Amino acid sequence: MLKRLKEVLFRNFSFKLLAAVFAFILWVFVSSKAPYDEIPVEVKIIYKNMPKDLVVLDDAPQSLLIRVSGPKLVLRSLKKKALFYEIDLKGTRKGKAMFSIIPSKIDGLPSGVEVTSINPSYFYLTFDKKTSKVLKVKLITISEPKEGYRIKRIRVTPKRVEVVGPESVLKNMKEIPTEAVDITDASFTIERDIPLDRSIKHLQFPSGDSVHVVIEIEPVWVSKVFKGIPITVINTPYKYRVIPDKLDIRLTMIEPGLKKLKAEDIQLYIDASGLPVGEHITTPILKLPEEMLLQKQPKLPEVKLRLWEESKEKGK
Image (cartoon, rainbow, N blue to C red):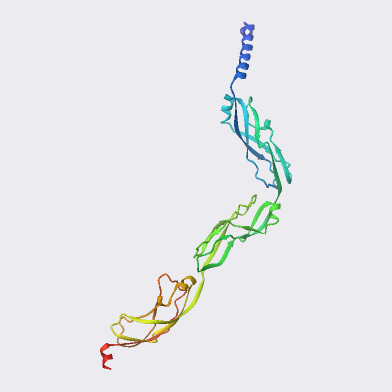
């Protein structure tokens, strides 16, 4: 059987060899005449073996933009392919380091294409020692509460947090701010979780990146005495007299409301519904415009109310 196989393989051997040589020459010719093109391709950068005791201070590039030339057919397939470039950070030390991009190390480039440009072709990264520090949390607020209100107390939990980051950044930091809380026109207590400020680059928060905040808002109470407020009597068919018929009253209110309040806006009255003719000791009722907010109702003194029929008055 082996003998027969040799006969088959070597039968017309010279013609077979000539055909193979001709096919190779034809492939070389066709390849050399295939249309060429140049296209941009993105290459993802992969950083590996970053030392655990270091942190990068710069914004490390995450990709490269290269231009490659080659046969159109090859380039067409390249558009669907992911390319990578690995940078090994093993042995990196504190300070500035330069990284040059070597085209032959781009992973995924097919044979037959040539890299014509790389952007960036090199870059620098600055490394600093990684350290940790416990910092006081500083709550940042925007604007002011509603007119007539103020911040009574601010509670932040936790008051201090551990922060990990570059030694050069943390050494001068005594507190870590939060994101700003808008308290514009607030008239009530605000309670929520507020993120720590992440605008300071390269900082990490092992215990969590937010704190619980309670901002207690309280009214600003102001007092004023209104003198000579008349007392009226309602719901009675009788003649009446009130002794005294005017009172001085002290009102404690939110300042904007007190500024707007005028003496003529204040009503003192006695509801005489069901009261018979005679003398009565009673306490007037205070009525203010609905939007007025009192800290508490003032304690009004008792007054004497005398009721009589009009016919009896004429007989006297």
